[in-house]
Image (cartoon, rainbow over the protein chains, first blue to last red):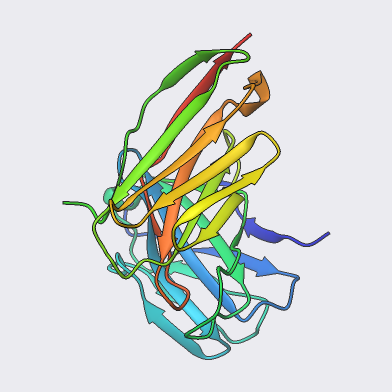
Length: 117
Length: 110
């Protein structure tokens, strides 16, 4: 089954304790992205990756890191989590859009709910 | 001002009614317009997408885009309790970056 898998699905942690949320896709997609979803603010992009070893900041990158060493994996790293990073996180992937391409369909993971105390 | 505005709802309708959802946007470069459906505790899934202005129909769902007014709509006919979800509009110019609305929560009551 084609899917994006995130782990953990739920996590409660404390301020300053480093954590990693893993994301893996089995569709051979070049493009991967992380979003956070907060009430009233919708989905906001944190980081994205156009391909292996190519990553770039989205709209809200502060406090996060990512890496793309393999095509299928795109982990999100919180080096020193703070309470304002309490949120619902989604990883998504798609084929890479060229400048004149059509709507690339993003496939989302099921989400990871993170609480930072 | 947000780039994409969407009423958060909730929008409560009786089963069988027409659900009408809409988004407004400010970026005239947006060319591709999408609607995602998100069930509770799930990730969003693509429902429909349209390119530029016009209508698109898929079963009980109709998407409309009016680029001159910077306004898009989604209509759900003969709504069912299983349509209860949050509906997110999303749009993009060329490239991969999607800009999402905040989502409208829809409740279809039996």
